Length: 341
Ligand SMILES: Nc1ncnc2c1ncn2[C@@H]1O[C@H](COP(=O)(O)OP(=O)(O)OP(=O)(O)O)[C@@H](O)[C@H]1O
Ligand SMILES: [Mg+2]
Image (tube, rainbow, N blue to C red; front, top):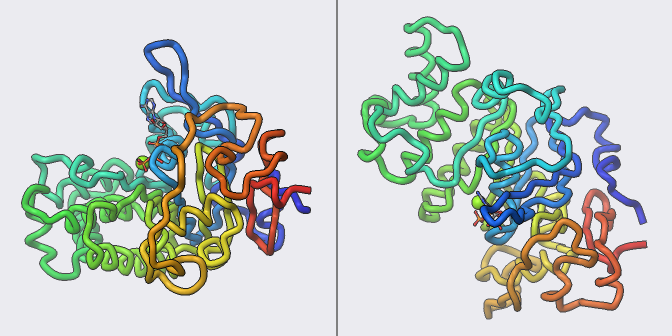
């Protein structure tokens, strides 16, 4: 069985990845002196223009991954080891000034909570213009002109009214669009979007996805799209990565992961969905399932499969070491002893 080991995933593509994360370990220090592990050996690769969906239950480490990529972990967050190569640079070695240029420039983040990410006392136009001013040396007139263009791309109607509004005068969907305008204004190569549509109704979520489809084409954007909702990824993401307890449980092309999941955790997660997503695993049952037990406290070296205690396919080999990601089909990789060796 082919091992992933962070090397083989793109052999056939013949392209240098835009982003390459290798064996990333992140922990959070606590006042007690004990640190909690949030990511334990995450590796991923992303090509220019590609969309990777990241799925996982609450606490699986999705936001930590986003924050670690952009080097905005809170003060108690520690990158213990790993490498983050982006656009030909090793981000973990960049100094604060270099990171300020990259952040919001070549790589942008859309935060999990739009209402907390905007300045309450600045008009929308100003907030987008400030991001542009920080990353370019455009004249005032050019800044205003480019801000107008970006806002028009994100708000094709009512552009001027929204540009003059304060965040509290906007709906949740409109605030999410302002964050998108801030993220795209410097034409980044990569946007990391941390559940940007989580607080929106289904129709507005679809509108935002539609907007991203258009922007992806226009700006040749790569996207890391973090979500709890697999339905949002079908037909939108090129690949999906499933995180469980700070580890990659499964990664592969979207259709394979969502409709032919191999890891027992992915299978269980998709069974918890309401019916109607489509064919295959998702939506096959009418009665909603739940995954028994709770996600474990994340450990550095669990010494066993971290999903073992909740797994319906548990076997003796599950406790004899942590399974590595192995290729199960094409470009679908799974970390489960069922597929090892
Ligand atoms: N500042 C912090 N200090 C200590 N522990 C933290 C901190 N931030 C996150 N954690 C812990 O790290 C783990 C991963 O958290 P993270 O926010 O990355 O999860 P998530 O997958 O984004 O969850 P959600 O879906 O709820 O947003 C959790 O156990 C969380 O409690
Ligand atoms: Mg989160």
